[in-house]
Length: 165
Image 1 (cartoon, one colour):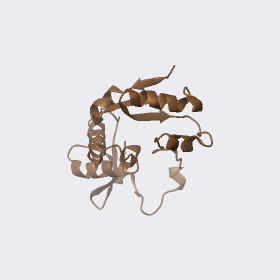
Image 2 (spheres, rainbow, N blue to C red; image 1 turned 120 degrees about the horizontal axis):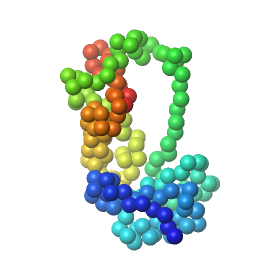
Image 3 (cartoon, rainbow, N blue to C red; image 1 turned 45 degrees about the vertical axis):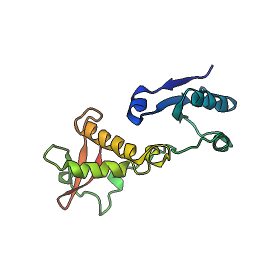
Image 4 (cartoon, rainbow, N blue to C red; image 1 turned 30 degrees about the horizontal axis):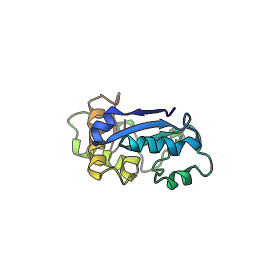
């Protein structure tokens, strides 16, 4: 049995079928069969998620079946109290919650920058205009508090220079 889930929102947004498979549930020797099954069902994009490092040779296996790894998640942790640098905000007054009097265009530029190295930007099968549209939708929905509880912005010399959602 092949374990995959068709993703309705992604399918509608991108205009082609998108599915997700868990690499915890699909063994390495089943991956080729699973991906062929998905292709036979006109699924064009498949997200594969793994909670641990992929086995040696797995990425090469993907290449052999015309699939490829476009994204690897990394978590960075920093102690902000001990790592404030000169170019960072010097006071809490430099950081404020977003409000609708601030320029949405500045936020849109930052959203595009946030996604520049994402899987949506790096995947050659996803049109650039869809990547841009996705990140514009993300920031608008975050600012309207549909996707984020709060959006904090950093001001430098009267302009929005950064954000966190």
